[in-house]
Image (cartoon, one colour):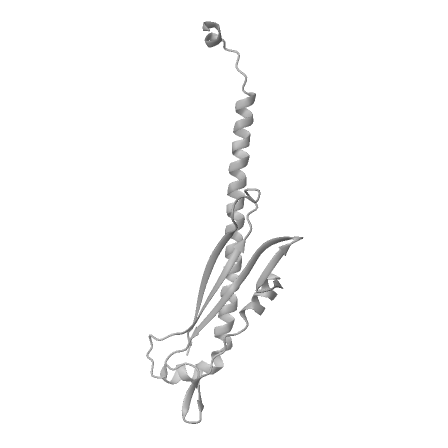
Length: 175
């Protein structure tokens, strides 16, 4: 027994292999995290661009009212004022920007034959300013959408990343 303890012949092959495996595992986790963050930021930026276009496309309905008296987009229909806003085509903008394909109620981005991510549950809420508003009332649009990204790590044992994105845009007249 004493000879085994005093034996200085070490074999570092097992320790080196373990260290390399741990480093590879750590690198793949970091790479997957960066991939997920990049996809989420790209989708969020595209949704932001689409919601800005919704607000911008409503400028002709809102500019005169906001310029003259802090009111949003309204039209006179008989004796009543009605909201005159358009919720736009956010899915269409996203599809053309990101190259999405429709599959049922989801829009999916493919990378070769595999699903890279999907977006669904789009909800656009356009908030018109009141007719007798003040400078604190905003003509704005909120877009809620769900992003689902399958993980490339975990060999199918981990659930997909699912996040709910909220993007807001506000119309601000310059003059």
